[in-house]
Image (tube, rainbow over all chains, first blue to last red; front, side, top):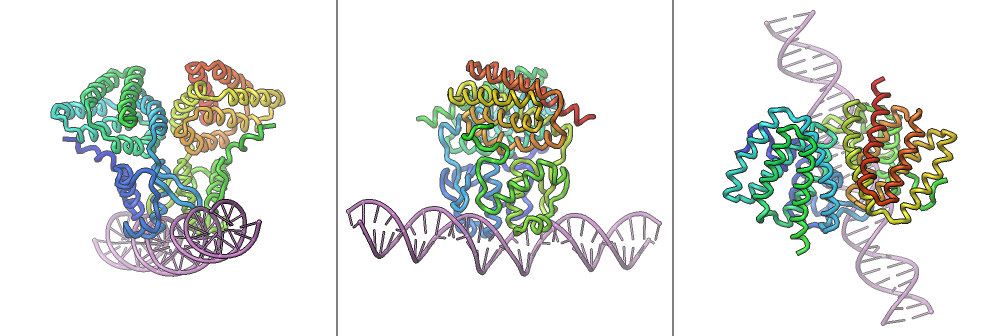
Length: 227
Length: 227
DNA sequence: AGTCCATCTATTGTCGACAATATAACCTCT
DNA sequence: AGAGGTTATATTGTCGACAATAGATGGACT
């Protein structure tokens, strides 16, 4: 099982305090998981009654959803969930490749030896799950792996951009296009190579392997999107 | 003078419609230019009376300011303008180097020949301004140059991240630490080399030159921050 | 019949008031 | 006098109502 020292991934670290926090997280989950369809309109009144809160907190939640590029809003018209398109996927993964490549490089430089150790422990625990091909757990494990490397960069700006910004959009593409498949085991091997490079403090290699890993991942999803 | 086909840079392309739009842009400018001090608290009531709008639109504006990382907010406590620190500057410029390097690479691949032409025209018009060492115009010109390369990437995700996200924070550091100095002419030469690489469709070189250009820029600001 | 214009309706934008929370001031007890 | 707890106050969070705008509906004119 996962470490107790780390939060449950994907649901954000910052726990919800206010009513707007909870509504934001609920809405975000519903959008990422596809319970609210991509491209659909978000009616403030409708959501207000649905979640039992005032329109003010709905607007607040929508504002934050705009900040992570999950919804778009036009003045006096309303908010819509973003559409999932091949072009959007490619653009997103180009950015992700650049940022996560950088994260891997910085992680190789800045991770504490404890963090490196924990990363290896995590991968070991994944090994058994992969053998049983528990595909959902693999999805969670994948997010966890990337999450730790991002945190290991020790760059607050980068961490915010990735974990609060584009990562939920990445998950939205992944979840809604289905993630199981033969890539599970190869992806795991790639993770191990990246972790090895980081353990060796080989920043250049870590960046390169991460970029390649994400490229493969994009090609995998792209394949599904076009079929 | 600048092209008529392009917007006035730095004030966002999307013109303000609603009252919240205007308040957001006003507040953002005041923060970037330092009229509202870095690290200071943003009282909703105070801003409400100051700008003559209700607290609701102030809150809306603050929400958007949080989206571009210019202010931070804690639940039930309030919002503060971000602090300018050496560590924050370095983290920001690391990200910027990665993203704008990518923008330069994509621009070399995706810019239309018209855009390439306009970029050269822009630089020509800057040449005279540099001779007279009009430092403010140089600041504006610099932003304009980078802005066009970002747009030339033709990657909507990247464009949003840079122009609506980190760029205002970059300007905040630059403006509040003063930008004039001997670097003006050398920066101009670097711009020319980047433009040349893009004109040659040499993506690799364009990325490398842009990264180096931004590194120099960071070192220049860092020098002022530490003195 | 088609096009243009006016009205009507539904949705978003804005406002002021109330509720809940955190910080500050104060008071009590050791 | 200092530490701990308690009330007071100022600020943020939430709400429902009103104003303004965009899109839909319907009508008049060519």
